Image (tube, rainbow, N blue to C red; front, top):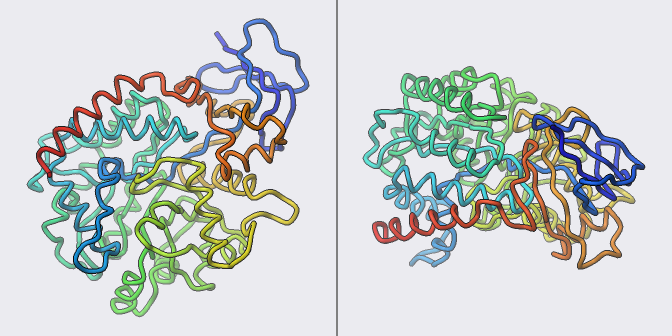
Length: 450
């Protein structure tokens, strides 16, 4: 039986529409009409907008939040942070990984995300050996997604080397490493995991040009019909090392040597020349931006103006998960541009609001990067959220998005993922149980890891 919602204002692919009555059946929108009046039994809301996908997450790193902000004896940077992250992975047990992921996915849903792209590379046992069930950790990710109700695009990561040119992996990477044979088996196991989870999608993630050879990159991309995600050009050292290896910059090399198209999502792509930004835009690939993590790690500023002016598309993700917030990622994206260009409303289109441009861009780009449909329209997945604008009822619809992203005046209220309401009054329906398991797991993990 269908359930019905009534929204005074709803954001559709055609723009804002008033007095909408929406039916949900079988996880999809099974009827959408406008200029209606509410009927008895309808659940009523003021503003409903489509839910956005989080295109890039390393779930286990949520457990590190707040633990990597102490300065070392020398200057800190991405590479010193990475060594801290490696050491942290040595202690995590499968049950703890599942509890951490469930806490994270719950927080994502409360923030307005209804799908996550899990860039999953915590594959192996603590000593680097394969689990007897090679898909053990992928199953834990799927279990967390199933419990929280978030949509999952699982992206098993092929990670074989420590640096460009096929360098041997180092000990800190032992929980990530596979060769072609074992990664093929991991992908087979991951396909079974995804088949047992409603609305899940399987893609693949060659980790980076540092971590796979050109031949391994082609091999990995051939293993899935779904999305292909890859870290690229996050740090200037990576650019310098790629130039030393190949004579080309990372994005430049990839575009010249790989068939990059709409299946691809290039994560970060922070350090690009104008020619690289224009080439990436022309390819149809998504730039997977993680503005909060990129700021936290001191990566740099993505060249948004050049990329968007060239027709580029983007999604946003939370990457290291140091802070979970759809509004936070979008706000940081715009504010970084303002600081870099010393201007305001940089990403907005002429005459439009910045919040609306950011939201529309992240919605469309995120859906493409996740291999799904998005947006509120008849027949599409029923994944959306309501906004509580009671603190600022004078805001118009687009201003409400600005209030959500920039001012904290408007907050996510209820969140539906694939037809199921998972968040009510800003709180996930299973928050108490999930949070209790997370606290227990963190207590044990911190006792072991220090």
